[in-house]
Image 1 (cartoon, one colour):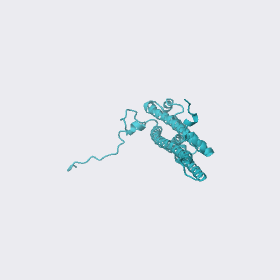
Image 2 (tube, rainbow, N blue to C red):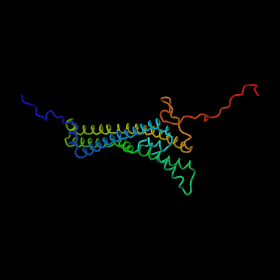
Image 3 (cartoon, one colour):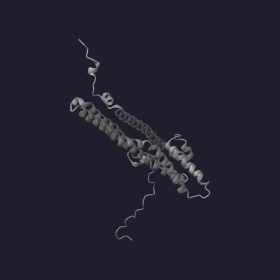
Length: 264
């Protein structure tokens, strides 16, 4: 029994044959989409690790940071290159620099501006790479569409050259066009999903950092007299999620006790 030729079993309408028929344009579009996809998943995994590291640092802050007798000793409990350690170090540096100003401003404003600048720098680092995801999500479908247009154009040329619109004449170029459309969507959808997910996680992290910065500001301005309660918080509450300071006794708004009718 004679074996069938290997070429007979090969699929003439697969991805590789479609790219070979498309020439340099098809290969270029495919290479651009592959680079975009690799960059998307690289940024996704690296940003997730970065975010998870900061979230873990926030748990350590709520567990042991505020139990220290002073701020300098508390800063030693934080990781050297952590986001929370950077905020504390900037706060201590700003506190030392305030006394060296020749025309000093109010310490409250000086510390608030310094902490806001430190928090903004962390937010900028968290946002690195997100612009690439947004660019991929918005441009990948159009890059795939460009490959589609070229494939349809090649199909029309074959129809004109052969004088008939037979399936065998246009199947290759049309298949190439559909493959490019699909690849554009496959690259764009994960980029959009990753962008929205990372932005939402960044927002939650920045809320936690803002709460910590506010507590740190109050601690510095009161010489350690004001600091958040580190006791257990109700699961799912805003305090448990962000580590924000609870309402202190006596800070609630005053309410007038209703006077009984007829009482003087």
